[in-house]
Amino acid sequence: MTERFTGQFTQQEPIPDEAIEAAMRVLQHGRLHRYNTVGGETAEAALLEQEFAAYTGAKYCLAVASGGYALATALRAVGVSHGDTVLTNAFTLAPVPGAIASVGGVPVFVGVTEDLTIDLDDLEAKAPDAKVLMLSHMRGHICDMDRLMEICTAAGVTVIEDCAHTMGGAWNGVASGRHGAVACYSTQTYKHMNSGEGGLLITDDEDIAARAVLLSGSYMLYERHLAAPPKEAFERVRYETPNISGRMDNLRAAILRPQLRDIEAQIDRWNERYRALEDGLRDTGGLTVVERPGAERYVGSSFQFLLLDWAPGKIRDVLARTAARGVELKWFGADEPAAFTSRYDHWRYAPSDRMPASDRVLASIMDVRVPLTFSLDDCAQIARIIRAEVSAVHQKG
Ligand SMILES: *Cc1c(COP(=O)(O)O)cnc(C)c1O
Image (cartoon, rainbow, N blue to C red; front, side):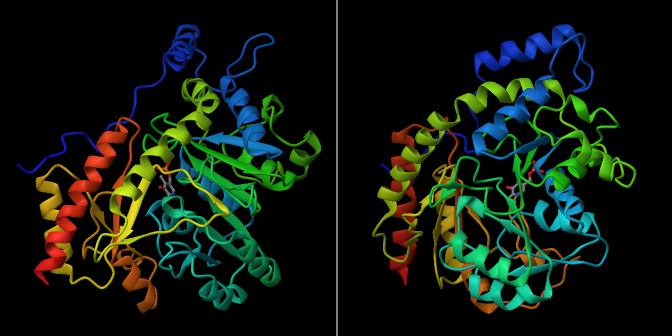
C-alpha cells in the first residue's frame, strides 16, 4: 500500500491564547488606530516597535500595513525616485520587484546560484550602475553577507534587506536585517509571525527612520513613537515628506507582541522539521539538497531542493505523482506564474536580459512549505513520499 499524506500545507497554528486575550482588550476599548490613545496610554503598535527593535538590535523600528509596503517605504526613505535603477534578486517573490515599480524604480535582476542565494559575481558586475540593492533573502537563504557588503560599500550601493523569510536568521552572528541600511519584514500569515497582514521596518539611520515614520502616515504625531529618532530628525524632513498612509493598527500589534516573545522557540521547532525533511531526502538520486553554510542561522519555515537539468515533462510528472499522494510541491520553473510562485521573466513590466545560469537553477527549484502544524513524523512522511516519487521518475530515465 502506498502511503498518502493528509495534512494541509497552508494551515498555520492558531493565534496563541495570550495574543487572543490582548486582541480582546484592544477590541473592548476600541482604540484600534495607533495614535488613538488616552491619558498616559502607550499604543500596542509603539510597544511592538520598541520590542522588535530590541529583538533585532536596531535603533529604530516602524510597524506598517504589509511587508510590501515596508519595502516601498524603505525605497522612498533612502531616496529612490522615478527612473532609478534598483538591483534585486532574480529569485524572489512578486512583491519585491512590485515595490520597486511602485516608486517608479527600474528593477534590474541579479542572478541566483545553486545555493539559492544572490550571485555575488553578477552583483559585482552590476553594482557600479546602481545606487540601491533590494536584497531578498528568498526562502531564508542568506548569502555571504560579508562579501556582499564589501561589494556594495565599494560601489556606493545602499542595501535594503527583504527579510520576509529571515526574521530570526543571522549571518556570522549578525542578525539578518542588520547588515544593510534598512531591513523589512512581513507578518503576513505565512511568515514567522502571523497578523494576517503586516510589516516591520528597522534601521539605525535617523533620517531614514524619520522619513519612514512620516511616509507611513504619522501626521505630526511622531512623538508618540518609542523606537523613532529624536524630534530634530523629524524637523529636518517633515515639510518635504509626503504622507502615504500604511500604518499598522493596535489590533495587529497586540496579536504580534506575544508571538515575538515566543519566536526563538518557534525557530527551533521549524528547524527540527527542516532537518527531518533534509535527513529524509539526502542521497536521493537526481535530487540536490541545498547545503546550508555554517555561518548561516536559518529559519526552516520552508524547504527547497533542486532537480537540476531535469526535463520539464519529468518535473511535471513528479509534481503530479506527489500531489496524488497529498504532497504539495511548488515549482519555480513553470511556464506560467501560479499562486505565490513566479519568475523574473514573468514580471514583464521589468524586462530583463536572460541569465542562462540562473534560468537553469530556477527551472530546478522545488519548494515545500513547512507549517508548524506538521509534526516531525509528518515531515518524515513527506520526505519519504517525495523520495519515492522522485526516484521512480528518475529511474524511468
Ligand atoms: C511575503 C513576502 C514579501 C512581502 O510581504 P507582504 O506582507 O505579503 O506584502 C516580500 N518578500 C518576500 C520574499 C515575501 O515572501
